[in-house]
Amino acid sequence: MLGISYAFAEGAAGPPGTGGIMSIIPFIIMFVIFYFLLIRPQQKKAKEHADMITNLKKGDTVITGGGIYGKITSVDESTAMVEIADKIKIKITKSTIAGLVSAPHSKAQLEPK
Image (cartoon, rainbow, N blue to C red):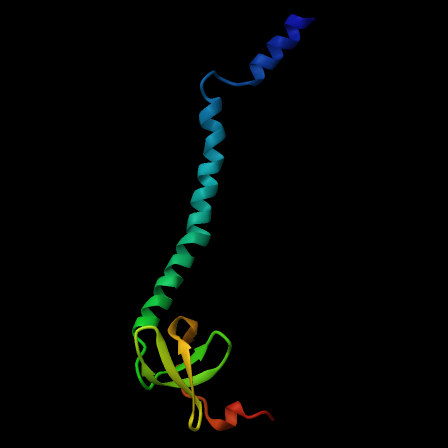
């Protein structure tokens, strides 16, 4: 009885030498999928944000990470002065700028209804 069960167990293992390679293939496939779905798009987005930060100039209308809209009045290496209302300016770190606003917001758009 012992000889028969051993023979079935040995036959189920498959051809010798393929067990190691076949067990690594799913991990390689998972890494490739993660790379194209998660890692690569995130790197592209980070590069675009860094390019936007380096190209900031006086007069750009921006939105900060905290949701504050304003117009840049001056820029230096790591900070920007942003005017958020008439004669009200705040100094912020350039990396906190989330993006550029294509069209300036009018007062009617910013006032509550």
